[in-house]
Length: 497
Image (cartoon, rainbow, N blue to C red; front, side, top):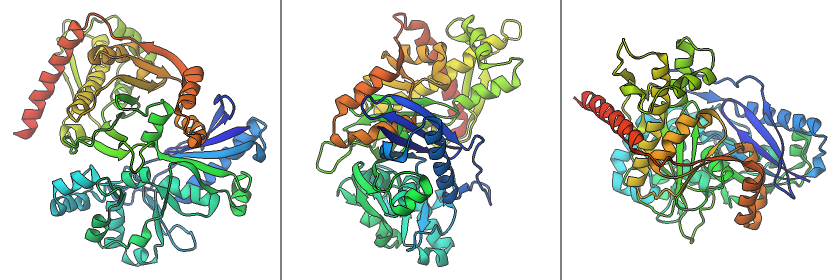
């Protein structure tokens, strides 16, 4: 018997099966094979059709069942991970009224900034743990102001994962974790942020019913069975945004545990019981998957680094190299600190952790007689690693006490130079696991029993690949990091001037 996990991304849908008895991953498929398209009618906009997500979900399920000879009755529960901060609007009949305004759409930035100025930083920090920003509630306000006829027809707003759950079950609901990523959860009052709805003039009835993150949220309907191939009555037992879900997939639930990803952009996601928002302009705070009203807080502090893997990819495309493996091999022949060559990797737009400044990517201290592409490769890996460490220092200033860093076995963390640099500078181990968001979502179905120890054992027994240990000789890494920070400070001062 199996659990099904779905990961609703903006580029593809991934579906995974795990064995109920052991938590072992049976297989993962992706739909479509090429990236899903986004529509951008104006600069800074990004939209997708929610119906397209559902079509690809159904196709992925059929592919899984066929590939692994699984029947609909062998799937005992569904878990859903999804792209955060998107807006889906449904009418009373359950039809989507417009394309989803997805996570990377920036049209509501000005609305969020105006809201922060009007409500004040103190109220937003105390109640929302965030600035309203370009999150789901601001996007809903944009629709209200710019598409009023459509807004009047809206019955419920949803996050992308809520919509997929609805298509299975014909039931409209959401979670506390989801409302917090929409920036509509009042942590001080432990309820919907009514003051924010009142400020925007948004009808409270647009908010779906709230269900627990773990447990039977709804069950597959007759129509859901006909469209998806999952048996009627199968429960949906878990739902979370992709970053909280990534942390869950890596067994990150307790204060001091940190999850990280190093793809095109980088993310550091730390769990805390501290409601500090000292760094709320640079760090986002959300209810983690194990947050519960009346219990000790479990907050996920999310720090995003736009300039991460995209920097290394740009170098591969523009240096005389054939692969990342060749770049890593070249870099390994260069000493720590890259003989003084320093790369600042922030060339992928504005960086929230740099107070939303766009400082670009910078390569400095090149000596044309002594340095070559190997030095640049090493400097790039170190510079990206330094940006992660810099971000973790911001998290520590916001009350995070790092005890362990867990990562997936992909992208930048496959580089020993990159991982060893971070481990040595933060003086903690980096545990590497071979898992995905879809696998984590599937395993999370079983967490309705509350057995976190069993859940963690599935990850340790099935997924652990290796652990990077901090090097005893930290001094050369610390010296190189200080050099990098000095160069970053010079650029920051130039930007301010």
